[in-house]
Image (cartoon, rainbow, N blue to C red; front, side, top):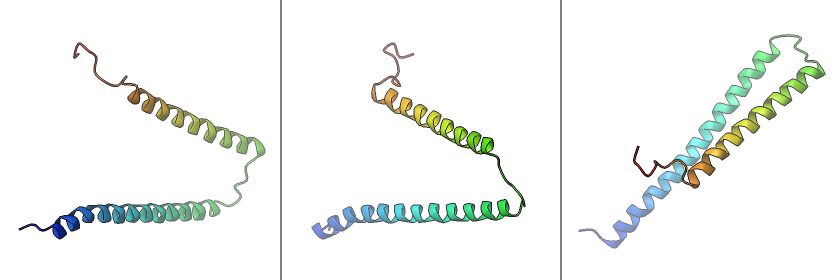
Length: 94
């Protein structure tokens, strides 16, 4: 026999598990990011004299900005296309 208390407990359980899973995933992602940064920093410092000219820094910054703009722009087009219904099949069903 199902009681109201059992129903309420069942309804609350998935929410708490989802929140806990989200926090675990975020913590794990942050930990992995910290480890990757530490490995890259140690590898970079082990290379020795790795200076970059002003032109190199400008090219690096420009490359990052253009890549981010392209990625953000394409994702925006995907979301706009989906919301306006352009991703739905045509009326003829082909």
